[in-house]
Image (cartoon, rainbow, N blue to C red; front, side, top):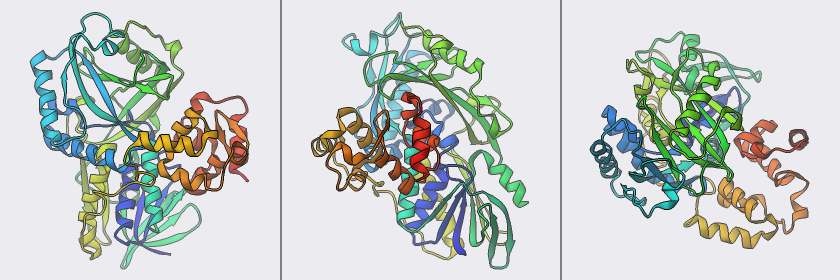
Length: 482
């Protein structure tokens, strides 16, 4: 089988490049040894943001690009991405008031014309924001956005597949060698394929793949582990908090799945991608981080879920992990059939990274470069107002109930119309597998979203695993195996 582009890695960067390339009409094959977004891209802090703290490192270009991408993504996937208000208390601050205020002003300026509110100081009337906090209630309020990271990764893959890209999950690149006409690759599904160009978007495994390909690059990758914990809800409301710590790090406390609060993240250097395990020390650090600020105190016993992802950062030589750049570098090797390797990046800038990748790929494949996704909606995202769409969904499928309708509207957007076509009552949804998850939804995930295991369904395509009931895993596995 012959392809124009063979992409290795089904994280956010690989899927975004597959989407961009497929819109050019290129014949694309993406291979992922596990599930889509099964590693770093489902283990983020789940924010679309400019990176306020990156201003301290003078990364103005990165922040500006990320803030402009934030605006594009809010329009392109309003079901997956929603505005969120952040409260930045000044208590325990390791930065002077003027510095924080100046940073927020610059953040607003770099955002340019934005649909989100500008930053402001925290007022005495902001009781919803201040009541959960201990001590001094001075501080600031600003805006960014929340994202379902694994479903945004999936949306890129779905859009790529709609334009004839082949997405092969549970398929590992066993070997690849250069020849006169391109790359010849052996895959774990037994196939031997040819490709004019190879893209190394293996994330934390980017350097390991280069070693296997016997390719030397100028760029290096630095592996930094970021861990998160989930506890029962610490505060009421849909706003979040950004908490300054004595070590100059910041920790977010974010509303999560209705009844919970997500807390993260850490920055711990690691040697291997397999070291993505949230340690007891990290759990204690995150508990102490929120206990400095909130009246409601937590302990390790309150943690109901935790995750850790290894960020493959571009190694810029910084001594401290928290100071390593979150910018990305794309490096090409044209000693024979071309190879593009991706170092670094973040979920907010994946679309821009893919656009820049195509700027490098297009001349190597002899095609004209064009901007394809700057104003393009993601699948399900053609929604002018999410609240209006939710109201229509609740009226059209009243049997879903308010909670399930909201969950599904956020997950699928207008793709619900295809999933539920011809279904007029609860009986048409099939068996309830637990937590409102039905046979119809699991089959959709299997047939349209590459779900193969209960973990794929319960933790990446949804977060129903937080509410899992006895026997639910077995029931999901049965439907998947039909």
